[in-house]
Length: 222
Image 1 (cartoon, rainbow, N blue to C red):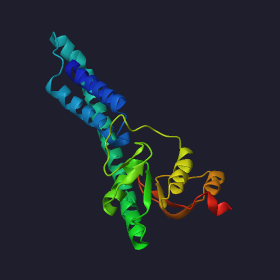
Image 2 (cartoon, rainbow, N blue to C red):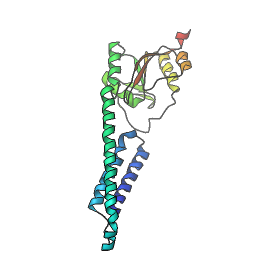
Image 3 (cartoon, rainbow, N blue to C red):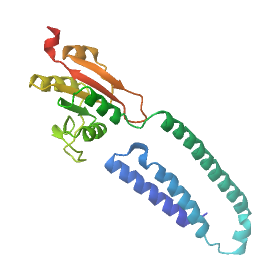
């Protein structure tokens, strides 16, 4: 019932969609802003209702009563869903860690693997591990060894199957290679061909689980 509130809500949604379309980052991180925009629009609708030109319009707005009841019902339902979702989120946060980065770094240190050449993919997930180990790692997306993450145009997505060849290539250059992946490598043919063996799986996690591989090279097949 408020033109100003509708304008605010539509503008907010447009800005959020525009931001996500340009940046393409954040996943669900910014979706809550839509709900906040909705609540602010309801509040603005109370502060700045449309002005009726005559009393008949106001009385004909006996529908206002039913409209406000519907409004309260919808808001109450949304808040109830939010509370239910909070309990679900709390359950998962209590039982699972958000990231297994700490466990991966601890495992590498305990097994004295810190001096290995580390390939990390996806690099934004592996970056906390590199920080905990205090060393750089090779980012396939950036095509370079990095010690911190820069969200720039130099980072390009790579095909998953190229990881096998890249890991073997670094091993053939004389490095003792560890491959840390945020997803499990499932191509058994390429794993055997390039001598890549799973050392440890660090799962489950809410967001960042890891699979640690040792690259032994093609000579293990001979």
